[in-house]
Length: 134
Image 1 (cartoon, rainbow, N blue to C red):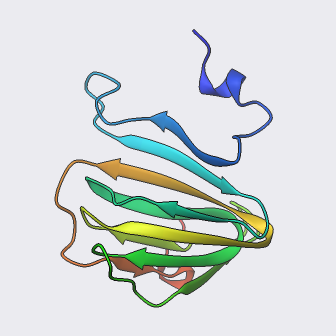
Image 2 (cartoon, rainbow, N blue to C red; image 1 turned 45 degrees about the horizontal axis):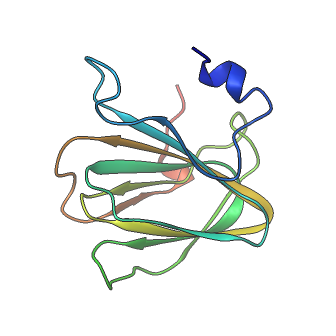
């Protein structure tokens, strides 16, 4: 069996890649997806069926949260040079929320992590200045 480390040694492909889906592993009820966009591209992430955290890993772009079908919040500009020198911009999404992503010239990479549950009543934006490094 090939692991994600060996099969993605050169990085994850463009688009959304499933690393682990809810129910894939006994005793681990978590979903993990990597989303990579090249510069100038967009991606609609369909509504999630569990609560989800969307965490910017690297790149620049715009994130639009859709808490309910047909509803959109104001666009949020996001940017992060790398994983080690800047805190992430993150979004907590309740059950049924979706995302629209647009990458700037340098591209955009996010991680989506989902767990069972209803989640917060409304989406929550967590700005880099609100994140405490330990």
